[in-house]
Length: 131
Image (tube, rainbow, N blue to C red; front, side, top):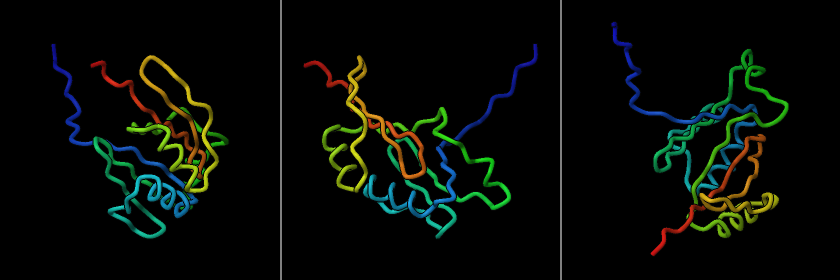
């Protein structure tokens, strides 16, 4: 039997494509409290979070339609937060409408909202460990 070669993955990150590049970069800069690094004006921005790199890029003009969707697709960006109420307040302070209702599940509490480009954003607070 021939062994299948494996993908030697050294890193993974999520990318969001947007023709509304700057508003999206401004939103994530304010939400995450950090400047994009690296950052190329009107072209590419990257944010480093614990366990995740989030990159935002502007597609080339001849490729833009590949990335357009009439509504949010299946992918969601889930951000684990220490204090869900504070995260909701922060999002509201940035000028975004309050997200939908808080949903309580066995794995914690979460809300769904959207970034300026319509990508679904989940703010999630895990269940506190029992003492």
